[in-house]
Image: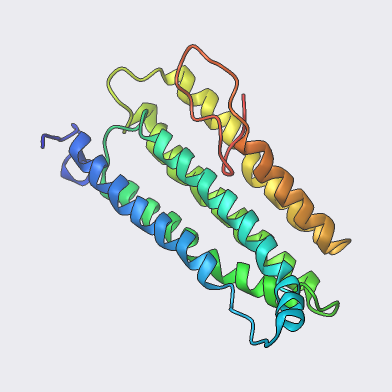
Length: 228
Protein backbone atom coordinates (compact mmCIF):
# COMPACT_ATOMS: atom_id res chain seq x y z
CA UNK A 1 0.00 0.00 0.00
CA UNK A 2 1.45 3.33 -0.98
CA UNK A 3 0.99 6.56 0.91
CA UNK A 4 0.97 10.04 -0.51
CA UNK A 5 1.78 12.99 1.79
CA UNK A 6 0.65 16.34 0.49
CA UNK A 7 2.72 19.52 0.73
CA UNK A 8 0.46 20.71 3.55
CA UNK A 9 1.99 18.24 5.98
CA UNK A 10 1.16 14.98 7.75
CA UNK A 11 -2.24 16.17 9.01
CA UNK A 12 -3.61 16.03 5.49
CA UNK A 13 -1.92 12.77 4.51
CA UNK A 14 -3.98 10.64 2.15
CA UNK A 15 -3.69 6.93 1.60
CA UNK A 16 -3.96 5.28 -1.78
CA UNK A 17 -6.31 2.67 -3.23
CA UNK A 18 -5.69 -0.19 -0.80
CA UNK A 19 -7.17 1.84 2.05
CA UNK A 20 -10.32 2.65 0.08
CA UNK A 21 -10.82 -1.09 -0.33
CA UNK A 22 -10.73 -1.52 3.46
CA UNK A 23 -13.22 1.33 3.85
CA UNK A 24 -15.58 -0.20 1.30
CA UNK A 25 -15.37 -3.63 2.93
CA UNK A 26 -16.20 -2.19 6.36
CA UNK A 27 -19.03 -0.11 4.90
CA UNK A 28 -20.47 -3.14 3.08
CA UNK A 29 -20.64 -4.96 6.40
CA UNK A 30 -22.61 -2.15 8.02
CA UNK A 31 -25.01 -1.99 5.07
CA UNK A 32 -25.53 -5.76 5.27
CA UNK A 33 -26.23 -5.66 9.01
CA UNK A 34 -28.69 -2.75 8.63
CA UNK A 35 -30.62 -4.56 5.90
CA UNK A 36 -30.69 -7.76 7.94
CA UNK A 37 -32.00 -5.92 11.01
CA UNK A 38 -34.92 -4.64 8.94
CA UNK A 39 -36.42 -8.09 8.50
CA UNK A 40 -35.68 -9.04 12.13
CA UNK A 41 -37.99 -6.20 13.18
CA UNK A 42 -40.94 -8.04 11.60
CA UNK A 43 -42.28 -10.06 14.52
CA UNK A 44 -43.86 -13.48 14.16
CA UNK A 45 -47.54 -13.05 15.13
CA UNK A 46 -48.82 -14.89 18.18
CA UNK A 47 -51.92 -16.42 16.63
CA UNK A 48 -53.41 -19.90 16.49
CA UNK A 49 -55.57 -21.37 13.78
CA UNK A 50 -55.61 -20.60 10.06
CA UNK A 51 -58.08 -17.73 10.23
CA UNK A 52 -56.42 -16.03 13.17
CA UNK A 53 -52.96 -16.45 11.69
CA UNK A 54 -54.05 -15.17 8.29
CA UNK A 55 -55.62 -12.10 9.89
CA UNK A 56 -52.54 -11.49 12.03
CA UNK A 57 -50.25 -11.71 9.01
CA UNK A 58 -52.40 -9.21 7.13
CA UNK A 59 -52.25 -6.82 10.08
CA UNK A 60 -48.47 -6.73 9.72
CA UNK A 61 -48.83 -4.65 6.55
CA UNK A 62 -47.12 -1.59 8.14
CA UNK A 63 -44.06 -3.77 8.81
CA UNK A 64 -44.04 -5.02 5.23
CA UNK A 65 -44.37 -1.47 3.90
CA UNK A 66 -41.59 -0.10 6.09
CA UNK A 67 -39.36 -3.04 5.20
CA UNK A 68 -39.82 -2.55 1.46
CA UNK A 69 -39.20 1.21 1.50
CA UNK A 70 -36.24 0.98 3.86
CA UNK A 71 -34.67 -1.97 2.07
CA UNK A 72 -34.94 -0.22 -1.29
CA UNK A 73 -33.51 3.02 0.11
CA UNK A 74 -30.59 1.37 1.89
CA UNK A 75 -29.93 -0.76 -1.18
CA UNK A 76 -29.82 2.31 -3.39
CA UNK A 77 -27.47 4.02 -0.96
CA UNK A 78 -25.20 0.96 -1.09
CA UNK A 79 -25.13 1.05 -4.89
CA UNK A 80 -24.33 4.74 -4.87
CA UNK A 81 -21.72 4.41 -2.12
CA UNK A 82 -20.03 1.64 -4.11
CA UNK A 83 -20.07 3.69 -7.31
CA UNK A 84 -18.61 6.69 -5.46
CA UNK A 85 -15.31 4.85 -5.24
CA UNK A 86 -14.98 4.72 -8.99
CA UNK A 87 -14.05 8.38 -8.51
CA UNK A 88 -12.65 8.61 -4.98
CA UNK A 89 -9.40 6.64 -4.89
CA UNK A 90 -7.78 7.88 -1.68
CA UNK A 91 -8.81 8.53 1.90
CA UNK A 92 -7.67 10.59 4.86
CA UNK A 93 -8.69 10.67 8.50
CA UNK A 94 -11.40 13.30 8.04
CA UNK A 95 -12.98 11.37 5.17
CA UNK A 96 -12.96 8.17 7.23
CA UNK A 97 -14.69 9.92 10.13
CA UNK A 98 -17.36 11.45 7.88
CA UNK A 99 -17.98 8.01 6.39
CA UNK A 100 -18.33 6.57 9.92
CA UNK A 101 -21.04 9.17 10.65
CA UNK A 102 -22.80 8.15 7.44
CA UNK A 103 -22.67 4.49 8.49
CA UNK A 104 -24.01 5.48 11.91
CA UNK A 105 -27.12 6.82 10.19
CA UNK A 106 -27.41 3.73 7.97
CA UNK A 107 -27.24 1.48 11.03
CA UNK A 108 -29.94 3.58 12.71
CA UNK A 109 -32.55 3.17 9.93
CA UNK A 110 -34.05 -0.10 11.29
CA UNK A 111 -35.19 1.77 14.41
CA UNK A 112 -37.39 4.42 12.72
CA UNK A 113 -38.64 1.63 10.45
CA UNK A 114 -39.77 -0.32 13.54
CA UNK A 115 -41.34 2.81 15.06
CA UNK A 116 -43.25 3.40 11.81
CA UNK A 117 -44.50 -0.19 11.70
CA UNK A 118 -45.67 0.02 15.32
CA UNK A 119 -47.50 3.34 15.11
CA UNK A 120 -48.71 3.62 11.51
CA UNK A 121 -52.01 1.82 12.26
CA UNK A 122 -52.72 4.25 15.15
CA UNK A 123 -54.20 7.61 14.06
CA UNK A 124 -52.78 9.42 17.09
CA UNK A 125 -49.21 8.26 16.43
CA UNK A 126 -48.78 7.83 12.71
CA UNK A 127 -47.93 11.48 11.92
CA UNK A 128 -45.04 11.64 14.40
CA UNK A 129 -43.82 8.17 13.39
CA UNK A 130 -43.85 9.12 9.71
CA UNK A 131 -42.07 12.42 10.37
CA UNK A 132 -39.42 10.57 12.37
CA UNK A 133 -39.04 8.00 9.59
CA UNK A 134 -38.70 10.62 6.86
CA UNK A 135 -36.37 12.78 8.94
CA UNK A 136 -34.02 9.80 9.29
CA UNK A 137 -33.88 9.44 5.51
CA UNK A 138 -33.30 13.17 5.11
CA UNK A 139 -30.36 13.07 7.53
CA UNK A 140 -29.00 10.05 5.68
CA UNK A 141 -29.11 11.95 2.39
CA UNK A 142 -27.44 15.00 3.96
CA UNK A 143 -24.57 12.98 5.44
CA UNK A 144 -24.12 11.08 2.18
CA UNK A 145 -23.72 14.44 0.47
CA UNK A 146 -21.08 15.38 3.03
CA UNK A 147 -19.14 12.18 2.27
CA UNK A 148 -19.12 12.91 -1.45
CA UNK A 149 -18.53 16.65 -1.15
CA UNK A 150 -15.53 16.19 1.12
CA UNK A 151 -14.05 13.46 -1.05
CA UNK A 152 -14.54 15.36 -4.29
CA UNK A 153 -13.95 18.86 -2.89
CA UNK A 154 -10.76 20.79 -2.41
CA UNK A 155 -9.94 20.53 -6.11
CA UNK A 156 -10.52 16.79 -5.98
CA UNK A 157 -8.35 16.12 -2.93
CA UNK A 158 -9.25 12.43 -2.83
CA UNK A 159 -10.17 11.79 -6.45
CA UNK A 160 -8.14 9.52 -8.68
CA UNK A 161 -5.37 10.93 -10.84
CA UNK A 162 -7.48 10.60 -13.98
CA UNK A 163 -10.62 12.12 -12.44
CA UNK A 164 -12.55 14.73 -14.40
CA UNK A 165 -13.09 17.67 -12.01
CA UNK A 166 -15.92 19.09 -14.13
CA UNK A 167 -17.69 15.75 -13.99
CA UNK A 168 -17.20 15.65 -10.21
CA UNK A 169 -18.72 19.11 -9.88
CA UNK A 170 -21.68 18.03 -12.00
CA UNK A 171 -22.24 15.03 -9.71
CA UNK A 172 -22.07 17.33 -6.69
CA UNK A 173 -24.75 19.58 -8.19
CA UNK A 174 -27.01 16.62 -8.92
CA UNK A 175 -26.61 15.25 -5.40
CA UNK A 176 -27.82 18.55 -3.94
CA UNK A 177 -31.39 17.56 -4.78
CA UNK A 178 -31.39 14.38 -2.68
CA UNK A 179 -31.84 15.97 0.78
CA UNK A 180 -34.36 18.46 -0.63
CA UNK A 181 -36.49 15.69 -2.15
CA UNK A 182 -36.48 13.71 1.08
CA UNK A 183 -37.27 16.77 3.17
CA UNK A 184 -40.28 17.57 0.99
CA UNK A 185 -41.50 13.96 1.19
CA UNK A 186 -41.11 14.10 4.97
CA UNK A 187 -43.00 17.38 5.39
CA UNK A 188 -45.93 15.94 3.43
CA UNK A 189 -46.60 13.88 6.57
CA UNK A 190 -47.86 17.05 8.27
CA UNK A 191 -50.85 16.87 5.94
CA UNK A 192 -51.00 13.15 5.24
CA UNK A 193 -48.69 10.45 6.66
CA UNK A 194 -49.86 7.96 4.04
CA UNK A 195 -49.11 10.41 1.20
CA UNK A 196 -45.65 10.95 2.71
CA UNK A 197 -44.96 7.21 2.64
CA UNK A 198 -46.19 7.01 -0.94
CA UNK A 199 -43.76 9.81 -1.80
CA UNK A 200 -40.89 7.93 -0.15
CA UNK A 201 -41.86 4.76 -2.01
CA UNK A 202 -41.95 6.64 -5.33
CA UNK A 203 -38.52 8.14 -4.63
CA UNK A 204 -37.13 4.67 -3.96
CA UNK A 205 -38.83 3.30 -7.09
CA UNK A 206 -37.52 6.15 -9.23
CA UNK A 207 -33.94 5.65 -8.14
CA UNK A 208 -34.08 1.89 -8.79
CA UNK A 209 -34.70 2.55 -12.49
CA UNK A 210 -31.64 2.02 -14.72
CA UNK A 211 -29.72 5.28 -15.23
CA UNK A 212 -29.65 6.87 -18.64
CA UNK A 213 -26.68 5.81 -20.72
CA UNK A 214 -23.62 7.99 -20.46
CA UNK A 215 -20.21 8.05 -22.01
CA UNK A 216 -18.71 8.13 -18.52
CA UNK A 217 -19.36 6.12 -15.41
CA UNK A 218 -21.29 8.44 -13.13
CA UNK A 219 -23.05 7.50 -9.88
CA UNK A 220 -26.54 8.39 -11.07
CA UNK A 221 -28.70 6.45 -8.66
CA UNK A 222 -28.78 7.62 -5.11
CA UNK A 223 -31.20 8.45 -2.42
CA UNK A 224 -28.60 11.00 -1.46
CA UNK A 225 -28.29 12.43 -4.94
CA UNK A 226 -30.00 12.97 -8.23
CA UNK A 227 -30.27 11.62 -11.76
CA UNK A 228 -28.72 13.39 -14.70
